Image (cartoon, rainbow, N blue to C red):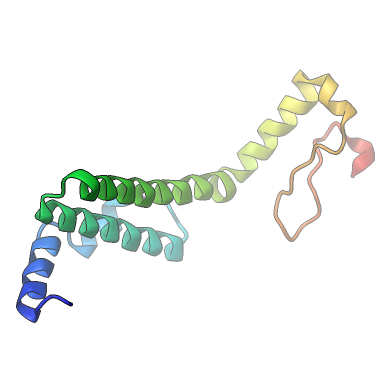
Length: 138
């Protein structure tokens, strides 16, 4: 059975009462992410995680319910961090990582040069990137 409209309104007030306004998220929540749709999605996910936390807090969760609260929060926050790390690795630092890999393979690990199959895709729609020491592979 669903909550009564009065209970629902009371819960919504309690849950949303301690959340920052939208402007705060725009200026403080991962401002370095330039991909607006990703950033907007992360903000929504963070707000959802906070609302679920407040719901469990209001219930004074204990025992199995407390375990469910902790697991839910860990999964939600880790998924946010995973998206941020993915953004940093594949959208922000992509060029830096390519150069670093090139230096690692070509200068410090001559043994790895024996395996030209070690390549990475710079971008999915482009041809594969080969370190500069693999001249014959270009």
